[in-house]
Length: 606
Image: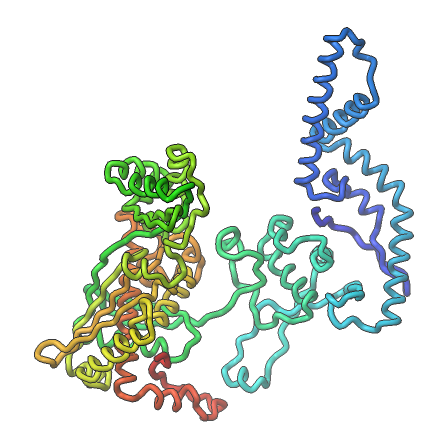
């Protein structure tokens, strides 16, 4: 039920604080008539109205046929008429409910006061026996009434200097904010379990206020502070219904810039959100080597998001019949027409089937414009399933996703067939750049790549992991640009190749990534910070001239960034600099209170 605002009268000295019943009664609403949520109350009266109306019509028809006077009624008919009148009054505007509740509240006001006095006396007795409560959730411990001017932790933590943060000295006390009377009442309701935390946005109509109330309630319930987790400075309206439920704050991740990265004749400054030291610096060094060598080039091989439902038949033969039907080119136009009705951007490309006994897995692949496209392809698949259900009534849909897609899991089908954008990116690094910038030799890089990325990964039984640290760069770019970080699993499928060219003097390096799943619209891409990073790359939002071109460009930038990261890390390992540099800087024994700026070194992944 909705949490109502009550006015609280001042209590005399030593007198327990009690709610003002008269003020509460004056703000009675019809939806409070029954101790049920509003939707259940409405459903109850709707059901009662139609049920008794049907019952009375049937009874009156029988009386007319039997020539029985209509004014002769039985007890059941009398109760039905009373129920009908009550439901009509309720449905006409809740006037009857408010009228009834006015009598209920008037007759029970004295008993409420007695109950409150008994409850308060019980609290005092419990407190005298138990002492102060250790936590709000301890069994048998009643929450004490809040103080009149309770202070809460500030929502924006101060940003002290590195020295002050590390030494925890000279930290100024942060300003505090009082909890309003309305918020205090709602917080208590959440703590006591009367108001679900997930419903605060709907009840309050203010996402920021809902997050603040939920945060304070969480601190009281758990007995743990959320100091350090900021609340202010974020647009909570922007995540409602699409990015995050029941927010209590947001996590800060620093964003660094690697570049300029010269790709296909254009320069890009690549944003990378990470907490791993040296990752941005390492990628930046690889970008420099690519830049001075003339830049990298990319090729988009495939662009198609997938979804694979699983259906079941009574026999394997029936499953095979549907497989042949779906894969028949004659039927593709019909299925494509039905699929494409789900969106003006969705375009069905292919359907690949696999059978396991009497179960059929159908892998739909389609283009999705500038969106990553999971929701889009799912809607199209649902349309096709509805159509096939009419053609094959014995088909049982087990799930719209049967893991043959395959989403957020390392799978050979993605490694072989691709998912999302399939990209190849390459560059030729000149011999003097390898020596002066990367501090190694061409031959050493080629040998290391063969023994580490190829042979070593094969010995480990890697699936799509024939690289040094592609997932490092993919994750950092994904977090910065609002992509789904869980899709780093398949998006990081990558094989890194290195080969000596031009009579062994220069280095040809390439990355092949068959399943980069990115979008520039929808999801986290429209959040302010992530949108700014997309704008930095020139791929913000949908491309109005060529649908899907922004997302495809972002995929090539991701691949080129991985190329830079692979080149730099492999060079550090080849030159024997990795452990030495990290022992020197990442485990530095320098006195940071002197405010020295530490130089950046190579990434620590191996």
